[in-house]
Length: 433
Image 1 (spheres, rainbow, N blue to C red):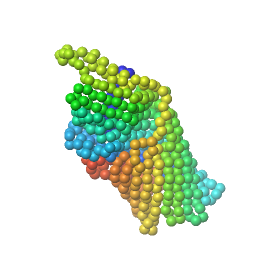
Image 2: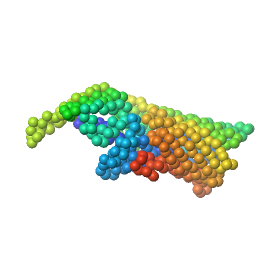
Image 3: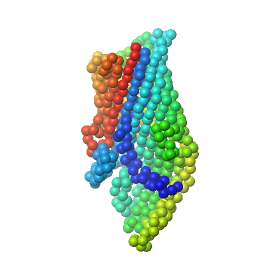
Image 4: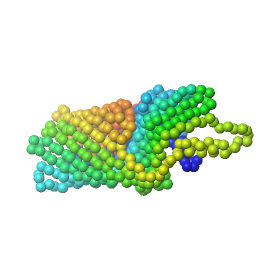
């Protein structure tokens, strides 16, 4: 372990709260708005080609004001930091992601007149950042340890996961139309996951104590860390391979009301043998650096301190294979029509398992201007934030070319001081008879 590697660990701990800011320049979305393999519109046409892209960055503590100031290199004053500190909880969340994908689908006529079978193929490019941190961690990174003189800071439960990967997907869906007018859609798909980059760190136990007169600092931690090969992190790099499963079920009754259950990305990636693995339970006692002559400073004294800290925190680091579960979306919702099928009201829950995210509960009213054009609003609570609001337009804009565009993070654009919430999703779908 050399000095540059030690500084990497130090900088990661200092800056990971702000890492999600980089996602502002990419397309993505927290709960994978458009990376589902199946959709309710499949089998309505003989063939279809779809392009999807989406992005999101959400936090229940960090604000747009702080994130943008950091990203633009502006001075982060006490007002900006205190605005976040006043919003902190015992456990705070950050989530960001982007996704872009292509879908090609077609269906085959069945011998049974009441049944259709369709096939869908796609390629995806995705990245997900998932983090959780407590009040003590943010205050320590924002204002240093002077505020904690004579106090013990609990840093337990802080963690970060970052995934970047591609997928090649394929699946089959079946539509059954019963004599009573009800419709059942069932689909299943598989994906080959090609892992590009992965980093995770988690502190199951961590404490920092600063002596009253700052004569010494004690730090103890039980943590694990994994990172893929830093020498191969280009777009075409493959540092891991895995598989995942998509499952789709939807029942529509004769009145148009529906119940839907969906599982997306139930899978894993096995990262290769060049992945760094570190599991450590250790402590460090720091009494400062003894300088005999400030005008004749011996740089080897600093180097020895760095080496000691490096050996303490990174001993037993190994390179070997490691398996991680992908953040997987579970979606359940119920929709019902009103006003002579002009208004559809949907209530549901999205839950991102293998993540710090909380369940997201939402309500979405959709008004149909005509059968192929609609507008909708959304109000939700949970996920990586608190309350969220959204707007969406969906419609046939030109000769069977369908546009779907919207955001589920409208509140972040309206108030930069109250939350970090940004996002946009867009989809173009061309159907052929």
